[in-house]
Length: 475
Ligand code: FAD
Ligand code: NAI
Image (cartoon, rainbow, N blue to C red; front, side, top):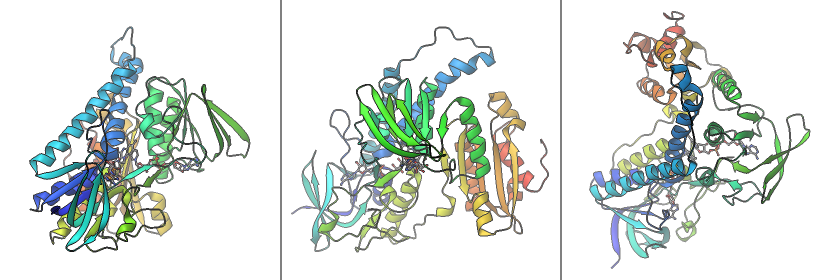
């Protein structure tokens, strides 16, 4: 008789491994199947996020920021560095260690929570009495019957036709995080989140970086005022961003990559680079799932079709994270994983899509939650706006990092906070207070009346709230 589990999760990225742990906490017997292999062929749970996404990119952003500080900013503090040098192999090695710590951490958590882990590809075999038969192939060959299945198979990088990823010259996020040397000239196609984060890493380390973006607006999903401020900072750093381009033929040769494109004026151009990163979005990953075997419906984008509660068209089959609609963010995947496990247990799991924070970990960082000013205008909603610059914040001055601002948008009548947009130091941490505030339907006055530690960057959030009522104290 094959193994039986209450819940089988396919994929151990942030959506899958968190769903598995929560389901186990709720008393179910749980298996989690993941096929990611580390450099020696062993299991590497954690998905894109841990292996080639959130974690390694933040490790390299940190290392490259240290390098940039040592090279250009320590002197402002009276610290002179002589003979500064860069060991890319050691930097990448440190990043790999951080990744491995996270892989091992997840394996430990599976043990602690009694989640059975299977290393290999999980696929639907057939519908059987009492559930679904799931096959495991690859590193492990196995089979099991699942009463509930949670599909959490994530996403992969979208390529450009005629420019396949070889991870040597034409790189996806995987190659972009594993370069063995700093390219002299680095090209990126797509000025989205990956383009800006990866462009920042390699620019800080000395590459001449050019980013080609198809849209005429910079960071169209970000509040316009914040995007403008960020663009100013990136221009100053020397990150070359060309908007409104149309990319044509891409030729890869031994000596590098040539990209033919037309600029915003429609003039033909060529860009010669040593390496090219293509970061034009990601596609849901259902390859290998054998969805047809059980009649699992995919949508027109190839994502697993789900309703608001992550239910698919099949009874007791759920899907979460990048493989379904919605933002492709690790914390969104995790929230859906928890909510699904709780729904399986008959509880009322819930994900509030209106309060999912976004962070771009550039310098300055960009973070936001809720609606942008342009969205409120389009909706015709009456709103008030308050901004406070970090230039007027004591902690930011002490840090030597005064770029940017906090901007708060509140309903004109009720004062409920509708959105908060931050560009500046530690925006990724500052946004958490704003998420809590919005989740509790706080007004801007609530934030303005709360005592914030001094000196701290969070005082800029309080001051932005005061600015909504036109009564900043320090500006
Ligand atoms: P994934 O993390 O993609 O995990 C899916 C897992 O399923 C993988 O391990 C895969 O091998 C496995 N799998 C697939 N099919 C099968 C199968 N048939 N059988 C067995 N296993 C299978 N998000 C943030 O919130 N913050 C960030 O800072 C951030 N930075 C990023 C940086 C980069 C460079 C990239 C590329 C992404 C980043 N993201 C970030 C996005 C984030 O990584 C994803 O949103 C998140 O990983 C999605 O989680 P998931 O569990 O849905 O899928
Ligand atoms: P993205 O959607 O953020 O940006 C893609 C960019 O490429 C867009 O600006 C788009 O207009 C442009 N583009 C698309 N096709 C193009 C073409 N043919 N020519 C020129 N430009 C083109 O996607 P990205 O950067 O690949 O990242 C994928 C996802 O991964 C993000 O949307 C995000 O969900 C997640 N991610 C999150 C991070 C974070 O939370 N800090 C960091 C990195 C990725």
